[in-house]
Image (cartoon, rainbow over all chains, first blue to last red; front, side, top):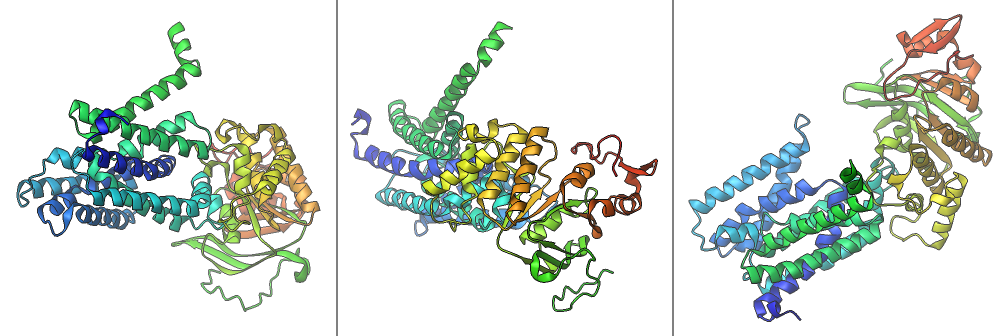
Length: 277
Length: 276
């Protein structure tokens, strides 16, 4: 199709990116509507020490390392969160900062890692293996299946938990499954977009879609489309401009959001009013 | 009085005098207590309601009105026994609802079908048709495709009532459905409640508006942790009875009771001129 995607490594990156765009776009809708943006960003960052250990110890590998770190993050946040003196955001923030610090210490002291730190944090075009592509496909199928089953419960309990819980939505179990799905998706997206830039696929497209859509189904379709477009253009730009793909994807996402917000402001007459006064 | 036992097999001799004979009861509440940690929110509350009754639950802030509804719904751990005929349908306080969620009015009412569909089956054309009819009933047939967040407070509350009707429960529980909304919306919701009662369903509504409750409800339950009074308006809304529930908040003027304003987020509970 595109000239930038003629090289095999670019085709792997494109395939992995398009596959992961499906769960990122769909789950992103729930991340945005349930206020989980900080959580999902934190999961990504918290995988940093796991990736470092995984790279240093080939028997573990970065995927297993980041998976373990994401799991440890979930356990740490949910166990400290039961302390009613601390708000959830504070707990997430403290675990995130601790994880990042541990990763930095490990990287510079114990681990002899040849991979540059920017690759871990912002992703790489070169590192996408066939195993990564396969994992993206598995996560895409799993997320589609799980969301099809959970859809009504997610919808009702996100809109009105006080109604949905007594109506039988099994709200806590639904919450837990959603967080696990988000964790798997974040970890799987890491090789392409890096620890710091996961929100570029998980938060920004869904937030942009909310500005453009007033119904859940259209918002979900829009979020997946935006995600996939970010991947295609972002990967091509990463190659042409020689930047990390996580950065080019997230930058495109931010640009898209700004355009959507500006278009909305123009449509609602805000700009005209402000200019007139 | 704070008996920790919630034994259900022990028949209580002090049944409320207003109770009808038990087999007819659509809702029978027997010595129900709820505690949040150390704080007892409801203590030994017992009452029975016949099918077709419109009951108003009154009481000051923190009296346990919402807790009583939660106990009936089974979302708080309660001791004692609750016997309900059929399913419950529920209208929570409007403030619990997300304003930013991308859904239109019809979509909210269709959600009311999910429990009946077992949360697995997707709503079909029949469910959507029913939801449309229910929106017509609450006077919002022309707003079916409007985003929920674009509706006024009164319109939103009417949509939530329509969602509860879509649940097709035998017992309809409403938490402050009339608080802070416009008069036409209040009238519509009260008309819908009346129609539900006429169809034999039982309605329990919490409210702050004593005068409105006295006008509209068949039965009043006056709550302040315990059930202070239970009966028709003229029995319950007497100064000495209200004094026990509202304590210092009641002002006695010419033998009529008026309430001192209870909080910024509630509209004034009584019209000037007090109550009978």
